[in-house]
Image (cartoon, rainbow, N blue to C red; front, top):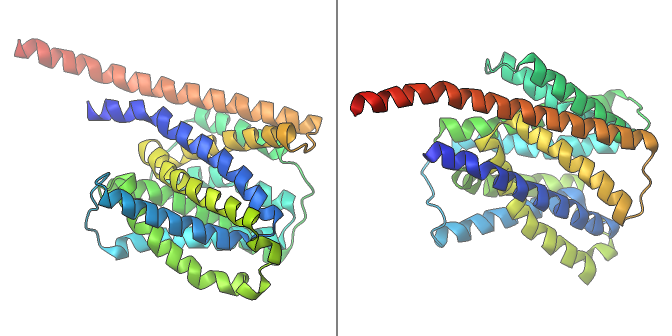
Length: 314
């Protein structure tokens, strides 16, 4: 029964991630319009998440479990690595190449899971993921220019992002921690690590005056509150599903954000981008169908054994 209850909650976790992520993106856009530094904003997000989890623990929402901090440290370092390297990738690469590298996270996770963790994906699932990635690449089309330094940062960003998402899953399983318990330890350590790194990339003296206005700080406060729900939902979704499924959800959110930017912010949407969004969403529906089909087959193979056991008991 606990397993069934957990599966029933997955759509709720995904909905929480979907809504909090899209709202967070649009609030971040407002903050960035006031030139608020991105890495500083991420550090604030995780500091707020750490505070929120501390309050939840004090209120009895969950009970912290004693773990060795050294076992959490790789996850914290991977998080800081992907924040730093993805920001450096954006600084040294064109938007097009940056977006292409983000798309590559999905196949890299599939590859790492097969090579490092011996977790293999079926051919049909790989085909659905290929369709999703191709659609997203088309939807986020832009000029792609390469340079040696930028490529190194981009590769490091993809690898650290991939390992971070994989370890969010494996750490919950290996250490028998809930999403609340794992994030309870990761959030404050990651916030402290980022606080040490951020001044080298975004020194306080470079803060634009408009970034400290009331409107800007209101947007930052709102995004920090949403980040608590978003960060927690990441751990919930990956913990109950897989890093690949979380990536598929991420591509769905990206398509929604592109459509939302077109509808509410007046940003242009080229015909090719519309085709890309359609292809990506088609791949998402195909992937979802395959996963549900696999889940149904698994349950069907278990039920006869269960029923035989009942018959013998009677």
